[in-house]
Amino acid sequence: MTRQLQLTWASVRGRRPDPSVPVLGPSVTRMRVHPGDLDFYRHVNNGTYLQMMDVARSNYLADLGALSALRERGWYPVVAASTMKYRRSLRLWERFTITTRLVGWDDRVVYLEQVFHRGDDLAARGWVAGRFLARDGSRVAAPDVVAFLAEHHGTTVDQPVLAPEMHAWASSVDVAAR
Image (cartoon, rainbow, N blue to C red; front, side, top):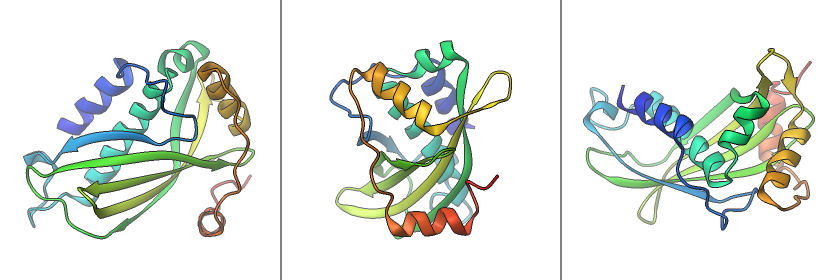
């Protein structure tokens, strides 16, 4: 429940925009492991990582100053697919960071990488394929979203080449199929 409240707060009352964060990231979110994050084995539950990633993605949009602008447009993000790789456990009271980076997009989906670090140690890495929807339920094309974020941020963004392993993952989960 704690992370759900944190997500609500981050999405509704986001942190102040950080002009130093570029549209292609990185955006860094600092957190600490709380008792409600733990599973029976006393390390962060795998589902909790996904909730933490939700908070970090909201912080990324807040860093760009885009939360209210997206809301005014009636656009909101949804996860189309995600995958995780766990390297080291996060335990009670440990501090860690989540670095969120927009790594590419296609006609329908934006791709983000979110990396968990405990100090210098890699704890986990997640990939997210996200879509944006409009209030009427229609899909917003990913290039339109990225262009809007860049324009709102006062910059332009060239489309990066999607890493082959992320492209292979997106194909394997059929995330952009129609």
